[in-house]
Amino acid sequence: MNQKTINKISKTVYKQFPEFRGNNPRVKQEPLPKSMQSISNYVLTYHTVTVDEMGRKFPRQVRVVADQKGEIMRMSTSR
Image 1: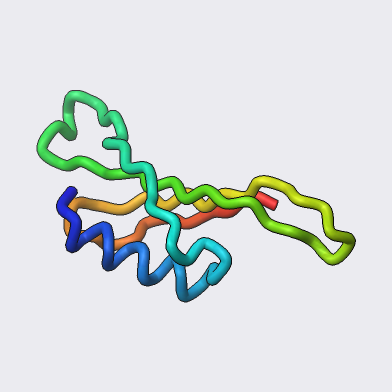
Image 2: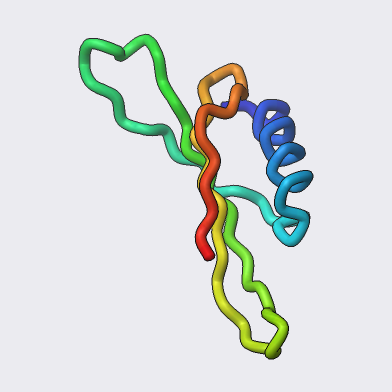
């Protein structure tokens, strides 16, 4: 996955989750069955530490599954 596509996906993530702004994702290629070798998906994982109203810190992450073109298929976040 090229940097231009990663930047496109990151822009969408930062818009929905501003606390992740400035964090670079970890990019992994998702393993696929042998019958679908020509198509591949990528998993981008963003990590940060968030502070709640009580001042407690806790880790938070966003996981994005996207295709080679940069189209987001799924996006999920931890609490």
